[in-house]
Length: 165
Image (cartoon, rainbow, N blue to C red; front, side, top):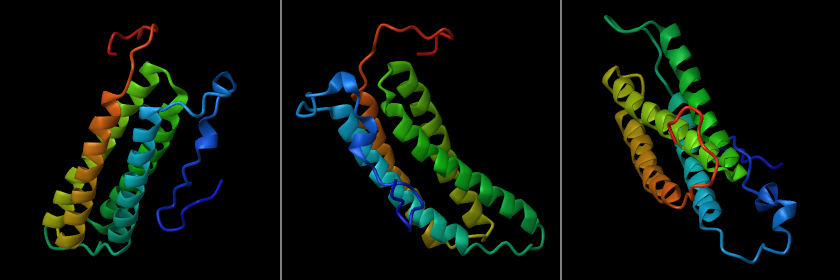
């Protein structure tokens, strides 16, 4: 598995999603997988700008502000959420509607948290305003792709025991 050195994420490989039941079906269009791949590639862009901004954070304790340890913990939490988005995108291609919906919920929650965290980090002067704005813009681009991806889901016969999906 090859990793993109800048984003820290593995490259998308269509062969990861080949199923022996689909043998000979590779020629058929797969709009969900295509949308998923496009969304994954956009998330790699988010990761690049997020990593850059977080690496240049000013965590020095400011008067009335949060201590440096808080920002280091917050940085780790943001990166953990960001990597989890990538994992959930790729693992959603298991093909089950419930798994896709569950992953979509986690992806949305994490992307929203990262986006809203940028406002706090800008306000507290921990990251440059321009960096935070770029991250928010890249997440907005991702959100558009996410909405398209979710629109391609096809409900299956399996029922969610919790009644959510």
